[in-house]
Length: 172
Image (cartoon, rainbow, N blue to C red; front, side, top):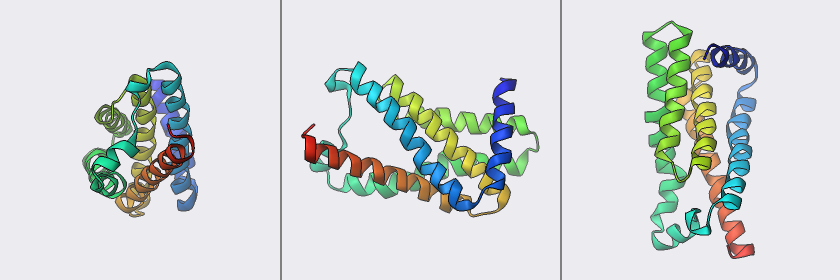
């Protein structure tokens, strides 16, 4: 556990020094790479009935698209990243508490999106990156809720567009 906290400390020092634009890009594209890897593993190892197809759900309920791209990121970022991390920063000065809150936030985020073990692992890392970005942005006083929500919206938008692309061209 000490190794995890030391690793997060080094990542924090790096994140704190880089520009806001870089944090936004890392916040969107690192989770996309992680999710792509674990989604590919999920498709290879699981039966097709266990994989999730957003397009079929959106066809049945068109407002689900708005929910996926905008409403869910607004609520999830507030409840799962911003509030827990902000409260830990306001009430605790211990770095271990902050790291614990960030990790707990990522665990809850992954469980809420659990479709399979592999997807949960990918979303744990996604939640970890977003909660950590939120922590850094809170410390920098750089509108953390706005930026982490933007990262989440961008990520969900890319995922939905990718699903549409795959469904349209490959009829999967």
